[in-house]
Length: 294
Image (cartoon, rainbow, N blue to C red; front, side):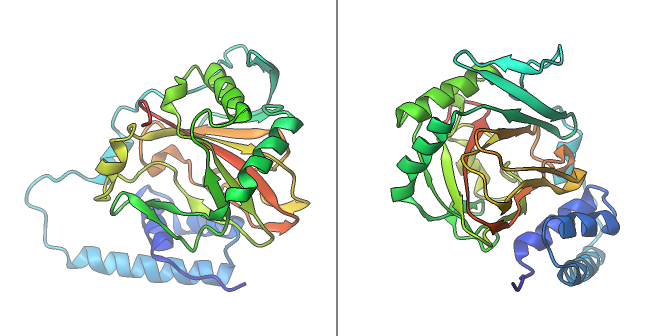
């Protein structure tokens, strides 16, 4: 399968370099996320060469200007989280006990088991299937949506509480995270066929993009993500965190949660959906916002 060096990939490489990661670390992250090594090397060399040339051509800065990197040192905002202070094996979600499988602190990642029942997984797939369309991504230059070659799944959105299963799981998530139910976007259900993937990306909205203020009017920044696995592909399809070399296997009813208290690569929440090798993958994603999402 041919791989294309996209503008999004070039931006990501520059972000990693600006955050202090060495080319060797960035290369290893790309290869672990499914990029062919020859393509990754070419992308790194050409992108960093052009970036350095562009930086050298800029006139000296004679007055202080705000830099995107400032977000890495600014105070972070409150984010949703589980009460894991006593290192529990299970946490009470009100209507079921949810297993705590693994945790990381930086990035903040929690892997959960038994978040959804098999019946809930099947119901979400059945409700979503008739409404699938090629997945879009947020277009931060305008605040709209666009097709993105890095995302090759099909998907649809539920509104909050649209079905009994959606309402039950949303209430469960709100209890577990102690985060207002209305501060969540509606579920997005995605279907990945063999070969489909979502290359590494961040879920927060880039403050430097002109369309971001329009997006933020609907509920502020995204501050956390919960990816719920509705089925089990035979091979592939894991959720990867390239900055820390961590991958979560897609197991039906399980989920992976991660939070980000500022819109900056320093959160180390770069993540992707690895290509499905055999079978298909169904996931439901819940994004949580700072304020009520309208």
